[in-house]
Length: 235
Length: 75
Image 1 (tube, rainbow over the protein chains, first blue to last red):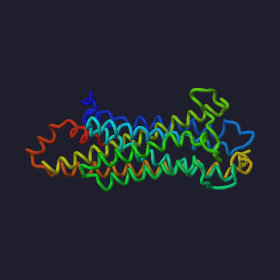
Image 2 (cartoon, helix red, strand yellow):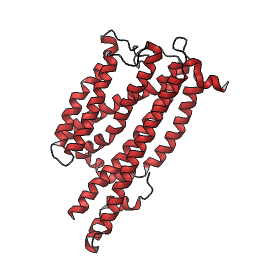
Image 3 (cartoon, rainbow over the protein chains, first blue to last red):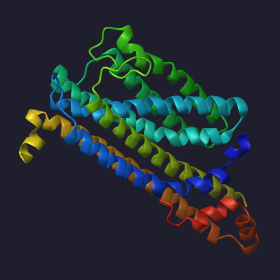
Image 4 (cartoon, chains in turn brown, purple):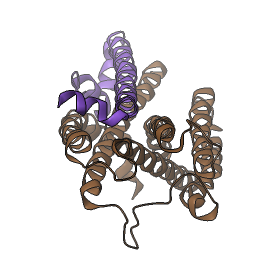
């Protein structure tokens, strides 16, 4: 089954895909920004500051999703010795890290008018900061041990340790008394967010997911060319 | 009307700075990754050009190398 994940087969797709993904991202982002900044209503409590949610929440969701995917790929890659899974995981990390930073910074900007402070050592915010540190350690590990066989073990351990933090982030608002508000969107139960705010949020999430895909494709192609460059040196 | 849109009842500074920070991060990340891609591709083309004919034929037999050489405007 894993032969379908061979680099040359994937490269024939990933080398052509970025331009189409970029175009789609621009279209979806334009619609999302129009909805988020112009068409969506202000909140009765938070007024216009609620618009920050349209960048903060998708960024947080995607950074959590990307880290979960990195852990899955690293674990499966390590068990079944599929090196390409590590390459995919490595290529996902930069966008996940940037989304994590965006979630932290925009959350901080939202905090000032809403809570009256830029930062608070609240369980949700602190656990998101810990996730950013795991992303950073993961990226630094690749930079330090890129040419070392140990890299697969090291990055797998980092991602497995980091994934413990993901459910803590998700349930921190339920487990502890936090300043951060509980989730407004639930898949299993009824969401408390109004449909007029849900649509822009979902559109912005789609745009951010496309951006993450775009960065992944570009990074993956770069990594493959880097490997091929080493191959030419050995010829 | 336009100033109301930008001021957003006093929340404009927060809203616009959050969106501006996000878009700046996106553009910066895109440019960094694109720069890395161009650098590696240029390196590949230069190395490929320096191979002797026998090695170049062997390298060209690998489909991924052909893909890299043919993809001059992939991003």
